[in-house]
Image (cartoon, rainbow, N blue to C red; front, side):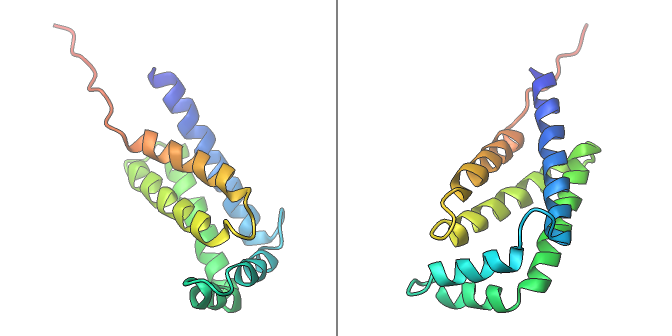
Length: 133
């Protein structure tokens, strides 16, 4: 059972590194446009002021999110001791993505929930290896 968890951990780690690099360099999407569309979709809700702030201050937010995605993905790829913390951070990011983007981009549920499920799975207690006597 540990082999598939390791493979899944590396797959998610690689996905986060690639997605973080794509965010940083604007390769797959125009993230600023996504932030502006998010702000328009959330108009009239309790998140309006926060999404408007994110929309107008998107450059530092994109830099922060991209760097966090690369760092957490790298921790998972290298199986660094901080990998569980990285999974928790990724889970929190996914929750934020879902909360802010769900009205303008419903597909975020698919992506976000998949990664969120991985984070929960990763953070769940692992059985201790038994010692041969």
